[in-house]
Length: 239
Image (cartoon, rainbow, N blue to C red; front, side, top):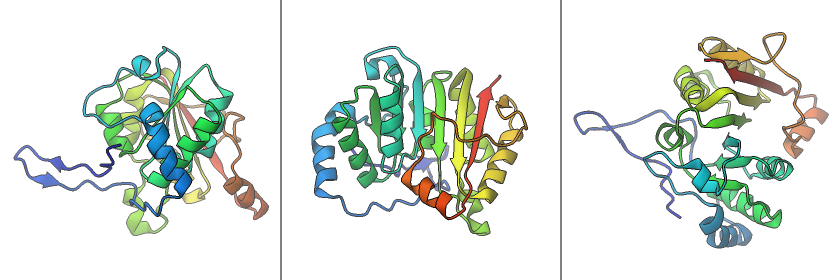
């Protein structure tokens, strides 16, 4: 696989530009199993980054509703959702190799044929690879909240990103977010309300109970025992 998560960007004069990114690349060490999964299953389920639109139907070998998950971590939730919905296609993006390896291993063990994974900056994938109006859902579960005020600008949920997601969703497609950090939930809600073209699926115009489609993770269960809250937001494209 080509592991080039950080790609250079240039202005019109050819000078390199630095874009504020929503992640820090903390690779850690690969376990033997994760490395074996990358070696054996990446050629089957892995997707290399390319700076041009991809044919999604050709990528999966079928024309089916497509879900994109951004930042799938170790992949447990994504594998569960894909396994529960064999009639849909799932594309997961994660910048950390151990998570990609773990996801590939679990997907192979579950004998999934409807899952593909990428190891690249999700913003660049959306900008360059995903055709407009091609996705039925975009999932963003527990992104880094960047707690400190001086780091809030690094949060992935910002107006330009939300507008980019909107352009990739089909009409009536859904952007589903979840966070366990209330200030970030409030930030998400504020940003989403400020972008034309979305409709909040909450009848109260704020948050929703966890839908059955989003698996309850071990991390979330631990948080519940400690009294921590989780906020789900689901917005539908209406533009």
